[in-house]
Image 1 (cartoon, one colour):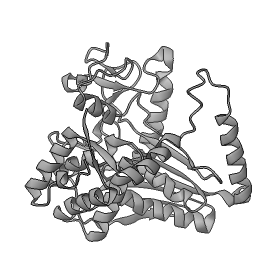
Image 2 (cartoon, rainbow, N blue to C red):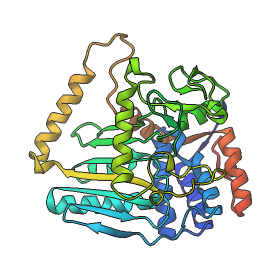
Image 3 (cartoon, helix red, strand yellow):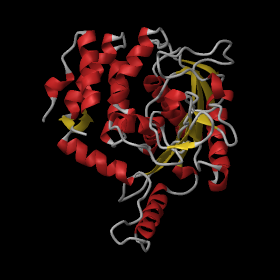
Image 4 (cartoon, rainbow, N blue to C red):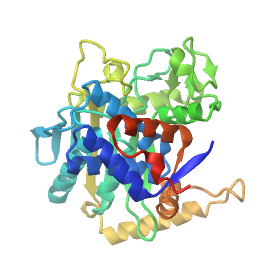
Length: 366
């Protein structure tokens, strides 16, 4: 599929303008744009500006508060629960991570659960905030129920991503950022836009049969947990997803399981919700609470080098360190620009026209 290339600064200004148009402050608009642009820069196209119109539609339905009063609802020296007041998760989660880092700076570690929030972008953005302070970062969130646990066709869990980020010395941080489903819903959206089939093991039909149809969710199908089926370890994916759901929502007072509000605006939340909004869980641990930072980074470099030198099955495909492809994409896209496929550009142009701002396509390099 053809792509247009956009300079980072132009795409950033466009995104900020959209958030300001729905009532976000200049500060919050810049922060929300930074989270989305981080995704596009790192090559995670499913969670970047392609989702921008989705946030706007949620705002138009009254399900996002553009000017939240974010508060600390419960707190100890090393833990807290944050109430996001229905704000953008792109704004609420950075507030919570900043709080976790501040607690870690004082006490060695900080752990913050969040309720009453919305979709927070890529988990890696938030975990990497801790890495910049020579800490180990953790970030996870629950999400709209699209995933069926092992042995059912009911959608009871979200793709529920989790991220662990570790600082290194000469190398980029090791960033384990993954959905606990076999594939994130955003990958289905990419396949839909490209009119491509998806791999077996990602999705099942309404009756529990395997399918390669990227549109299967629209006809009652469900995503599968990591592992796809019991013989390949889907119960482990179910366990990981359950962990994210419990830490993000049962712990914080957010909605969990099938009650998590859908990201799409055309579906309303279920009645009699047990909690408030979407939930997140963020954490930070000081490396020097365990050993000197320089020693840790030197051994992280050694760890990376050993794994990179592992004998490959295919000489042309060496071992890939978690976070390595994203770091390479960021270096390239900062230099050459950010590619957006034509359906995304068309969608954002229509959004811009409806909001009365300059069309995104006006800023394309090619």
